[in-house]
Length: 238
Length: 238
Image (tube, rainbow over all chains, first blue to last red; front, side, top):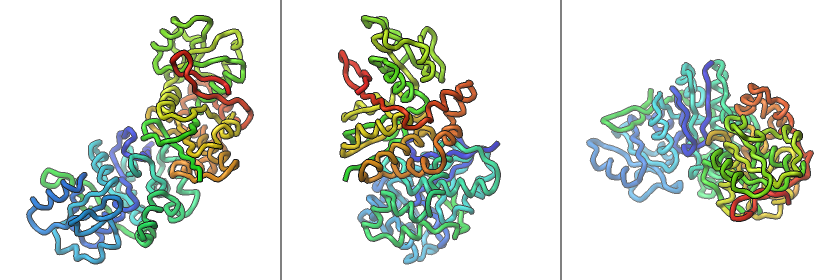
């Protein structure tokens, strides 16, 4: 039987898998899904702010610089990590964006190092995202977590993805998958996320609207995968 | 307000805490609690099988050698890691036991390295164990996990400890504490543990009776803490 595993943070030893769903609900995954939904062409995830600035300088064409440190855009960035903020930009007029976020980028790159198809999953594109990996033998959902530790928000979202995967077929559940599923079943997603440390931090910064947007489920058909583009990791719609 | 955190495995970065509850439900924590309940005097936890053998040779007095690798006693050991097996030995006639287990020992030694009082908690002594740390400002529950990853059995037990702690006073809950509590509330402990990977492994070895014993809640008043004895870590009743 096919199986599904949930990994709570990239600090855990990563399992083998042929299909990855990477979750950074607040907010990288949601922002990435929204970026492509709004006509963005290509996203280049990098680890550090310095690398992001340097890469944008070296790229031909028009590229945006987006991302966050401590939930806010670093100096000189065009955009932060807010999905709602993307509405203010005509994404189609750019070749793409270079993106760095504290937890989400690291999780994407960790999954990529293990092989298999790597996709971005959020609550907004939950059903669409699981449809992309439901044929896989070993599905792994990697949560970005917060500061190297498991995060309530990502784990709850992962539990929702497990539930949607089970709606498409039979999967053996790992301990992590069972734990995430139990969490997801315990309360509405927006309530769980509102109680999370990361959710509290966004509220304190006045970003409740982002939080609510991130918790809306199954309202996007967009799917995103990690590929190699000109020798570096890149995200594109598929 | 005082706080309680749950750490799913020693692979996570450990928080600061002044009171630790270390959980390896299947079976080290349960065996340790039972050992002292049955008159055992002192337990010396060590990391490796070789170290356990060597230490027993060097100790004055009568010492048992107990522990497991892959759930079974290593060659030449007097006892495995079975709490029920302890009934076959007159523990009072020994000075104590040298113990090594795959996950539990590592978790105990990891907690000890962070300071604060370190106690052993299982389902059987849940209420008694939380009473020992309920005055602390920062309680941390460290789950042993399985092979460096979170385990359903330990996390469910940890959730039960969070519930019991909340019965004694107000504690701010970390993301990990909320996740464990939601898991514990989702089904009876014995059912959750029966679904866990570790539980399945014990059943496959014919150790269902151990599993059921480990899942009995609040039937022991025994509490156990980590101390230094003759320059090395030791467990004793308190």
